[in-house]
Length: 401
Image (tube, rainbow, N blue to C red):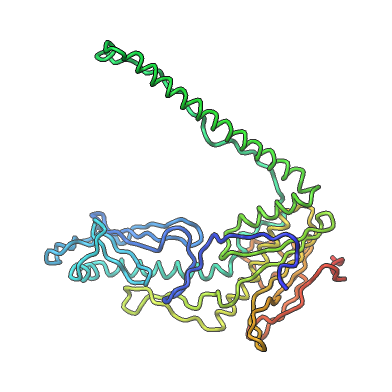
């Protein structure tokens, strides 16, 4: 049964896994790629999955010809993007769809730029799929410890209003002085209200900052509840591929940490990879082999456990041993019902972790790295994971180093 321990941490996804009829991708922020044509030539913009950033570069070596020059008077293509179905979308400078004749002209004139745009979209999709097995790349080093760095209140205070001044032509009007005085009073009242709100926000920030300092410099060395909070904050800061539940239990005064992780099912893995269509003007999806899907799944769950182990040791300086187990929901052949099955369970001391994670995570074979720890896992020759009995509190070997 999953989630055996007392405190549950819900990790919200920072990366979306998009599954559709034409394939799968991971994305954050903007949707896909586009290319814009102008008097200086063509430029492409591609969203980088997992970062919320976009990449832009100039295509080709010179200015593109205007479609009207050879298109029989048809409107020019100023923007070409890749739609959700993997096909290019052609628009004019006002964002309106082009006519069929104008699209034919744009395809002919910008074939190379369109192909490069499609290739960039394919590369981005495939890189996002591969990244499922690279969740561990951002694991903190084993030497990292919590360190308090002061932060200042970023919001500047409101500025007091300047007294209004009479214009040289209007100052003589009856009641003008009274109107200016009323306006000044209203502005002053608004300023004082803003100042009160700002001061409250500043005090709230400083209180939270004081609590953060105490948490990092004192509480995580003395208080189990504070250790729980510090661990939750560290894990919630990770960009997770899907919403994930982790149950935790901190024991022996903070020296022993138990973690249960609700892993994704293998059915959640992307079933296809992107490729450039034979004509070069669209993204096509190619089915992955069952072996490739299984290997990605195995690498993904090892990477998840590796990342959580590293984050735990970095967040909790008193922790000397982490016991982490991952389970998944599997249909039972006999009954057809869905049941939690543990697939992997690891026990690692801080000393051992320092040896396993001493090299940059991106340089590690994450599956082989976890195999250097005490590991319970049943992996068939075809790469299928079978159910296991995980480590549990009370196991005799937990006292071993």
